Length: 243
Image 1 (cartoon, rainbow, N blue to C red):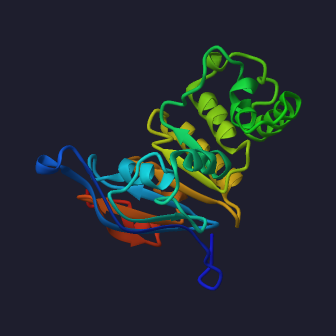
Image 2 (cartoon, rainbow, N blue to C red):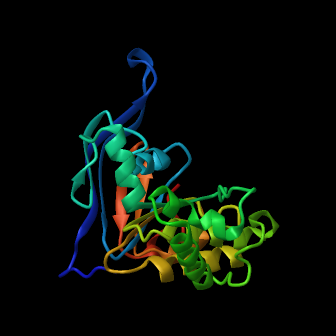
């Protein structure tokens, strides 16, 4: 976790608005949002359904453009990039872990993990070797050439984590990574995310409803009605959240 004397901002959101629908009946999903995430920390975005968490995550990832305000990731303003530049930026800098795993059933475990590297132009042999290395780190050594669909839910999420991290992105974005898992498996997955991702040069942002994993956060940003309502430095303060 970053200390007060060595804080480096990884993500900075300033004055961001985002609405959906025609102007006369637009729904404001984000309202003048102010948000920062730091290198070397795991920060969670929490709040009730419909408060804007996933929309904010999408703006940070560059998959949605804000209507107003600025979005800066590792010093790069995303709001001024073309779609092609955004795609290239995401490939290099972002890793994604989703609730539904999003594994490709026709590919082996190893091949699923290789996908981000192959997209970047890495040779097949090098991608296969790197995939094997990170699969060993997440405890799936010996399962590399089997079918991803033959694995348990927890094992499939480990494959998804390996895929998200194989190209060593500085920003890891996790959208409800434990909601489809039981308590013990979810805890193990979060321990893995911290162990593999918590480094001084990486930032981890987790959107979650799962109060069971709040303890893994360094800080928690609570959202309400399209805004960040508060940021707490001690996850224990949200053991009984206000939503």
